[in-house]
Image (cartoon, rainbow over all chains, first blue to last red):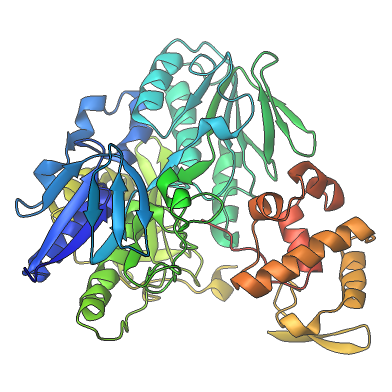
Length: 414
Length: 104
């Protein structure tokens, strides 16, 4: 038997795309995807659940259904990877040897990481936005909300979909205005960053949007503890922010087996070369999507652009050739700003989000760093594209490398 | 990239004043950089800086605040006391290292 085996840990956005693309190219390989369950969640949809735009059932599909029939699926928890033996140990004792391994187990909120978060107020006055369950419970809390201090708070970077917390603040503002409860609500956005966003121009633009909506910005706030009895969050430098309803983004961690296998950083994200996504610990291990410690956004769009580069490189790699493509950290995301509008940003490792048009210079149809209805329409339409184009690995007419065409350079803009 | 005159020497810095050449740095320069941001270095500050320098040399990137706590063993609360408000940024500035990657 000379058949070689590719094992992909995780059947989410990145794992599914890569499995479908690679099994088509690697005809004489067995491709195996390991995941703990058969529920593929459309995670960008969580944001809309608290406002009733989507119901939970709109966002969950079978993982198996989006993987090509020829891809083998194993339902199990990963215990650890043994890089020396090229072996995955599954919980329950099963072993799965591999020739090549791709880790695509994403990142997840870990509310246990912040003292006090899982206290008496959890799911009562404190909610997590990044799980379907948290988003659903938050919908109920918002429904019965009559006013007070609504605090949206990010614990620590990196987090997946870093703009979602801001979007939640914008959407909450619009939703409460629409339902006559905005004047009774103080909205506060609390972040460990020194502004609304990481990069200067986007931070300034988004900071302006917060101010226009009378959303208070509390920056440089690194949470130490949450006191759910007194309903305050306390920072390491002993500042306090009181709340009546806290929407928190807990510390995000990669899968625990990554740490157990000696492949991760302090947050169990796989240490990789940012250009090739090859593990720094083993030549036949790669990580793609949120699971990797790439210095760019943890987002589906990044996984999508990265997969394009990765697939070419990986085929070279298994054929014994040099990997000569380099991922540039390309990311783009829609940012919902409420009232049926959205902004869009497009950037990479080296270029911060700038204004302009995307993907066609001067034409768009999407406007960068500006609010528009078409951006919002794009965000909603993306759910269809996700299931029908992205996951099956069909080509989208978007270049994987970020382009400066259509962007207004920094000097002009600043 | 620009060159700044500090301590009677030429120091390579970026737009924000972060030292870009690892070997431009020495403990005397740290004092000067600290003064620029209103800090006076104590022995404890220097222990933190030493960890940052050493970890950067081994890992090729500036450690995150979490790593300085987890691997270096300096409690986060203390780091906020030593380098008020923005410890990650201030520590790397004084240590003559690139600003930690702003994960977006």
